Length: 117
Image (cartoon, rainbow, N blue to C red; front, side):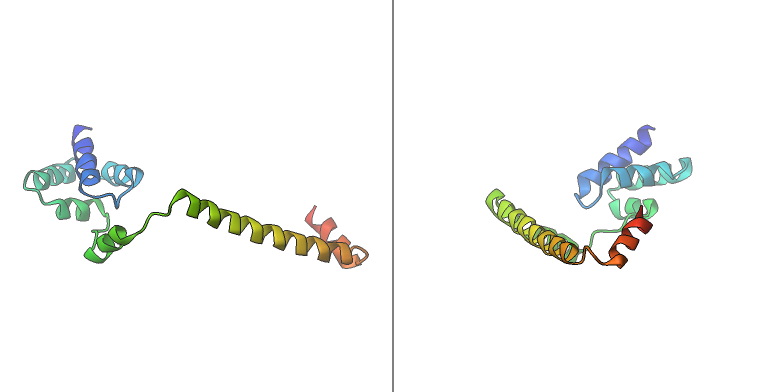
């Protein structure tokens, strides 16, 4: 139990690339001998061995650079983007309703609705 916690904490402290649940699941899958080897690797600061033993992907430089290069959007930008999506969905809904109302007399529509229920 303590070994798993130490391994989980070390991996999560090393990088933000790993989710807590994924690390926990990987640590739980290891037995005593593997945990001992992982602890020894942590003592010699060999996090790569621990990641490999747990079956977690090793963070590459390319991946690390892309996470550094990500630009966080301001709340106003996020709001604008969400509003744009809402507007597009409302327009699509309006168009679909028009098509449905134009073809209300179509027996194929009624048959489809009966089949869906």
